[in-house]
Length: 418
Image (tube, rainbow, N blue to C red; front, side, top):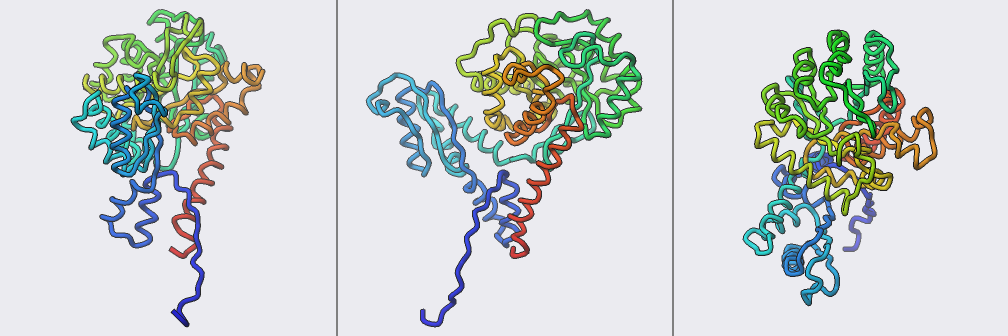
């Protein structure tokens, strides 16, 4: 219209990694709350890899995906029914994927179960980083970013700091230093789980831990006990521990799961192929991410059924535990796949041998790449980073968090325009 508004509309590309940030931006724009709820799922696109799906199932998924506005990429020959099984890529925004999941209800070829799984995964993504971890009476909130778990090994033969602490006072002092440096959890172990190690008996393990746990009042952060023995866990929790970090995902000791359920502790469920004595001899996977994801899903379901509240469980992919160099690198690169579990993810890559093998570095030279691995993990969804070098990791996280917050302020605040 002649004489109309001649202002040029500016377009800004906004990168928001979390659903709660998009919701907040909409609210600042004055969007109705009902609209926020409907539109947030449309702002996040996800790509899911469907492995070993039958040709018939793939064709149905493709048809139903197109019907709701999503996409399913399949091999060209699948339309003819060959090969009998294939892999497929499912793509779309969360809103459309949720619709697809519901449309698969009642379909053959096991697609009803797939639909339920899609809906569950979408719900976990929509939860974003708003999940919590209940450990005893505390509630840990990860909405402000990942937390650091400092490592104290009271063993003579752990791969990194075995034999480092000559006295319990030294170990307690180091734990206090870690808290001052930025650790929000301290993880203490009395048995080495390095490759090829053999475990001490239970009494010897507790003898290593007892003096430390007698000094819990001197450490302001919550304590985690790294053990797969219920007897050790029970004694440590009796002395104030609030988390049980079990490398066997509560499988080694049949009394562990009932104890953790009754005690109300936080638990870390870790994946390990084999046992420490033999786990690195010849670890093999057809699909390392898919197999570990399936394992952790199963353990979460089983332990929820056994009485452990879901909000008390965290997961750990088990970097270095029954994995080759390539497996560890693939896991670090693909950590975001485990966000679909909807639980806090613990990652412990600190100083591990795969870093030394990849970069030809001795133990004392692995601090920098360990910090880099921690940042990579945080950017891919890790909630808790289990590290030896707390101060250095905390510095890196301060920069990471500052960048995230500054961008969120700019994007959400719009320089004062919103």
